[in-house]
Length: 76
Image (cartoon, rainbow, N blue to C red; front, side, top):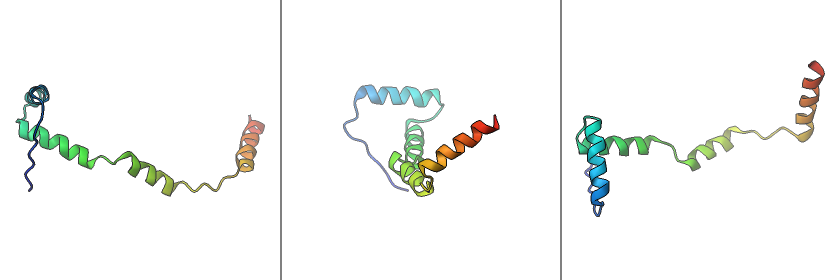
């Protein structure tokens, strides 16, 4: 397991993190580790958009869409 040091963190930020850790009944180290692991596990916006582009086929034409809309209106 790696060790991470954070330098130049403001006292205000450190105090807030300590408060939040205490509210969660965690040590500051455990709280920070949880935050970092959750951040690392969350896909980036670019990753999500890339997956969407991969799954989207884009094979519908304007005529296909308009035809489906008209068919739906005829059923009503």
